Length: 223
Ligand code: SAH
Ligand code: DHB
Ligand code: MG
Image (cartoon, rainbow, N blue to C red; front, side, top):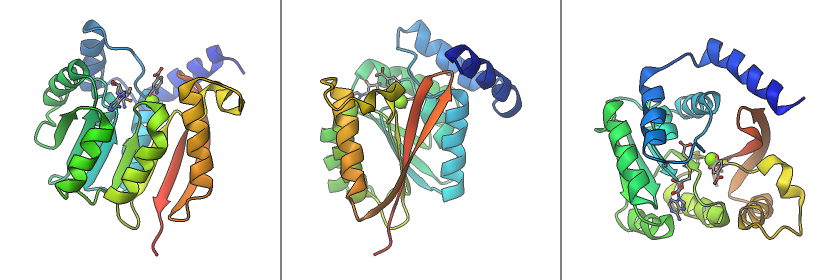
């Protein structure tokens, strides 16, 4: 199987399960026009996240890594009328584009973008007692993923779901000698999760238009 085939199959599946959506396409167009990198989740991955959040019955969602708000819009669509999503973004320009896209999606009343490095904004959320969040999507700088999962444990509750993106990295995670901070951080994350008794965790490989990658999916155990 090749990237060409994975992309063709994603296109076939998109036609069935993620047909053209003017709001999501407008968000991608706006982000591209303003020079943001096209590293958002794929349409099928976005729908997967939405369905996971719906299955969880999530009323409060915390996302780490907003970019232009593409995954944010998918996740916010899983919320009930009184639901809330907070999304954390380091780059003020990304946050501004995301705010435009969230507004255009009619989700401004449910979504708040917090600008700053997540290792600064997460303790602020904790101090403000913004938790517990029911669902976490972690998709920012991969070097800090272990810290982000630990923050999710502090800001979650028994039964909260934690999803982490990009945990396979085209198979790069097999390279124990890698000096790529994203690979080092991802290998640290898997080591940490393997020994974290407060979580039940799995990692799943994915292929598609974004190549070969994967998600960690974890649930905070009832003690
Ligand atoms: N979740 C988005 C993609 C996020 S890309 C989607 O699928 O649509 C990763 C984002 O994380 C980028 O916008 C980047 O600026 C942001 N980021 C990187 N380091 C960060 C940090 N330390 N704190 C918060 N956000 C960070
Ligand atoms: C990158 C980041 C992501 O979150 C992703 O899904 C794909 C690529 C990146 O930094 O290159
Ligand atoms: Mg990602």
